[in-house]
Every structure is written in C-alpha cells, then in structure tokens.
Length: 119
Image (cartoon, rainbow, N blue to C red; front, side, top):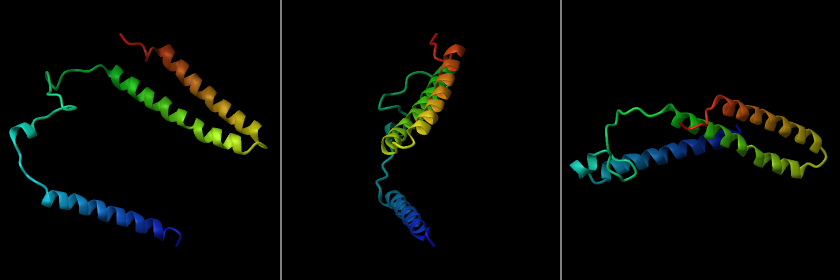
C-alpha cells in the first residue's frame, strides 16, 4: 500500500517519456543528408581509421578514476553524520578510518602495480 504513489510516479514518468519520444519521431523534421549522416565526434570531423588500436591504459585509468572518485563521495555523508551525532563520534571515526585504510591499501596496490604510469 505504501508503494502505490511510487508505482504511480514511475508509470507516469514512463508514459510521458514514451509519449515525447513517439511525438518527436512522428512530428519531427526528416531531412536526411549526406553531411548529417556522417559520423562525428564532438563536432570535429573524424580523422584516421576507426579500427586503430588504443592502449588499455586509457580504460584502466578511467576505471580507477571512477573507483576512487565514487568512493570519495562517501566522505560527504560521513561528515554530515559525524557532525550531527557527537555522542558516537569514536565509532563513526573508527569506521571511516577503516574505510580510509582500505582505500589507501587499494591506492598503494595500484601504484605498486604501475597502473598509473604512462609510457
């Protein structure tokens, strides 16, 4: 019973987004041209072959950035809770210290493996 409003909002969102997609497809202009159908990247014409090999280091650095960036976001709610509940500060401080140690162990492991070195 408590989830009926959530179900209603999800259904309404799906109906509205579906209706917008159908209406833009039906009512939108259809003027294809050779220039519009060409692939582009950031508005710059493509240069070279699309099948050239790219180093896996780009992917590795991006994944590591996301990993440490997302884990860093957890410091914000911790700071809010730490400031609000002064009675249990030691437990919260210990938990965040443990989390930080795990992060640092992971970072040192990545540095030792040389994943951040660019050749």
